[in-house]
Image (cartoon, rainbow, N blue to C red; front, side, top):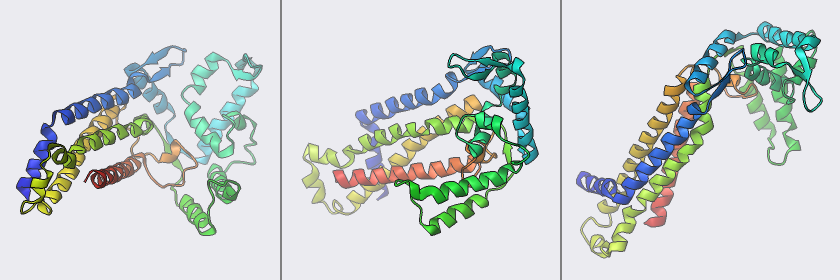
Length: 321
């Protein structure tokens, strides 16, 4: 059996079309995942724009200034500072749409490195950018995490209003309880390596497609060459021969996809670093009910990716065999 598997693997790796497809796909993955870093933009407090490696370094320093545990007091102070800036007419201008907006110098000095944090905090109160933070009464809404929990419960209980998202009573209880088990307060920090990886992660489907194309020749080759009748009449043609092809297909798929995965993840982490793996995913989505860190979430993505891969390989084998 081992010899048959090696023979099938050798055929897969030596086929010129497979080599071309694997290399072209690898180059595409390198290009697509590199764009996350090369196109990354950042602005310093003086309003000067940066791109690529410089921008990533600047953003890291900016986030470092505001990183830490997001206690209720810390969140209240952030909102209060925003409201104080908004009350000062010297900080405000009227934009082209006739709306009140912060002056560029105020934005660059204060809001630039806090916008992501404030936007995520605001989603607990409203979906209206960060304008709602300027309006809320801090004396009445001090308990941010209590408000967050209530917001999640309201969203789940209102699911019957949406045909595409309807929960049963047991499902509602499950998600509400799951949300309550999330550890608070959240810790904030630089997590752009993970967030940019998630934004481009779906591009790995190109690798799955490439693998499926390569596997098309596993069974079809004999049919095309007219040797299928000879192979099927041999001693192990209908048993070990077929099993060897299936095992070889999975081994080939695992190896190639793992290479793609390592390259994709490696490129993003080389550009952005691996900081933020221990942070909760709620710092990018405050309403998420999952008690996971970014690193744990990435592991789940790996499991899902290989599950999809195995499913596609299975379907491919059924179709072509």
